[in-house]
Image (tube, rainbow, N blue to C red):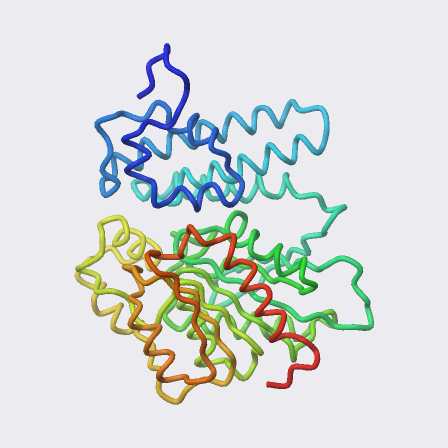
Length: 375
């Protein structure tokens, strides 16, 4: 905790405890000063990120900063300033809840605040969101469809469908990737599937998530603005695992699939860190830890038979959630259909490399979805 007589800063012990997350926090919308404000009063004796107490203090600090941004936005006299402040609040509320599992009701409240603030931050005059909803097995799936500038109504657009992981949200991490695809000239379809985004804690993630994606493809097939022959898929973290399921089961519907730090199998549940165990249990709405090893076995993806689309995997050699051996297995089983960009000394999602690989991914997707690509 910073004494009142000391300059505001991130306490060293807190920095050391959460340094893995910092590239993630700073890439999207938050600034270093946000960390100093949100974490400046953190108790110096609460540095174990495996404990609920750590994430309780973390949640309170980020929530307070989010409230501060909202209060300022509501009194701001000009639209651009309001939007900037609401976008900052969006990130703050997300960081408040992304590893907070102690109170499911409060987590849901924070997730709703994320969506509300994001919508207030968006300038429809610059780029319409094209919102809608799909129903899948009784679950309402909200979505955004973003279109690039200067759309020719006579030329259907290639489209990339983007999937969250377990603890990301559409309005923070996924939108940042989507904006790159849109700037490349693609449409981007962002959604909150079962167990994702606003549906986290309301419905479990299904093992057969490719069926959700099939419903999305059906929805897009009715949209004359979208070129059904030039669909791409992108997933981050557990969304990368979903991407591999899409490649395996729906590859004939997609020209290209990007797997960012997913894999065909997950590290054994009993070997996971406590916060990761909670993350998986919460997303799958499985209260019994004893049921998780069996679930992980059912999630293991059978790679036999290859796939019918091109796949790019981005992975770190030190990934402790989806072991690097799974990427090597993809190379072996899927052959020329699979290529991998491996980062040495990087852990899950290769957070230090975001600025580099986000461009690699966009370039690669562009080459795959080009009109003259018949592969």
